[in-house]
Image 1: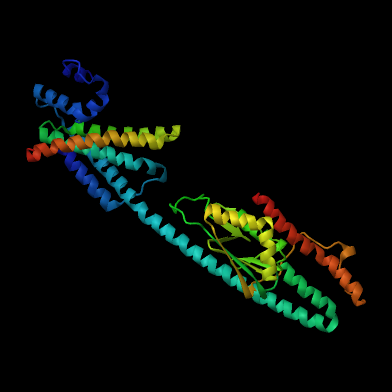
Image 2: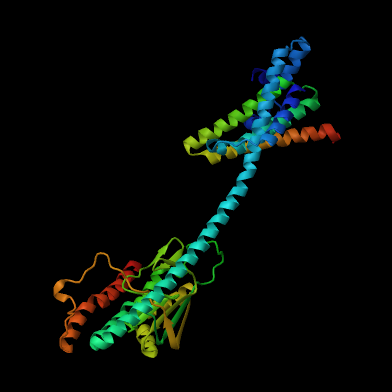
Length: 110
Length: 320
């Protein structure tokens, strides 16, 4: 529960403070947000499965965001940023979908 | 990774699709299962310190993601604002340019009037020569009967195709304007832009530029002169065949009409920064017999006429 409380506090703080992101980091934001969504759905599913763990949730969250940003950075350096972004979005998208399907089965038993 | 391999007891049938299967069948981080297993072994090993660390990490992550989301939503507004600003600037600068052009025209008219007044008293021959030069160089507005040719872009299936062959191109206008000069036009304008010795017809990207003004279809080319004669000579020359090809092969609309009265705008006086008249050809200012005077002016004015023909000729060569 610590992780959830912390995240909520962070979100509220972000909404209140409205910090600005440096321009150099702007390209990595969309992928980072998708990666964060993936971690969120994973965490929700684990919670419904009864195996939720704060540490695993937060580390997967952090590593997802960092790895996604790194991949985009690497892609930009190699000139294949768009393609790599697409690859990341496809993989994360599939994971989000199947996690969401699993959550749906948990909630509606269907 | 090792747990995954131990979990898979037998080699799956679709081994070649391991990546997709891995992503689709096991979307949950295996770490959750591991952590659950660890907790089952020794239930209470969480310390206060690790709990605080997790809380801080969670707050930071929440803050980061919220910031990212907010700043991703924000640029849409700023882009619109920037676009609006650019539009405003375009309109404003356009108005400024139009105002300045109007001023140029007023001042040119004043200059012409004052020159006229001055020369009418002192040197009537020079005044007439100057007036005809001003017409030829395109400095003053002119009216007269003439020929109007309208070129219209042909219909396209997809308006987004930029380089469609049925669009009127700069080379088409160059050929037409050249043809009109060759057919005896005395003054030519394209969509109101007077063609002078310093006017270029060219394309920049998708637009046709005449004297640096971007024009769009339909292109109205007005030429003052003997309309029936010009029409005949234009049809006989290669420009006429070119226009026929445009009409027949590319569906470009070509409409010709004789006009009783065309009004062509003037460009105002051209300021030369580098070109000077050599001393031996300089117009004589001192009172002289009118014959010599005319001679002097004629040679002085020759570069203007020659420059005009050269400009039109050059544009034509560019196109071919």
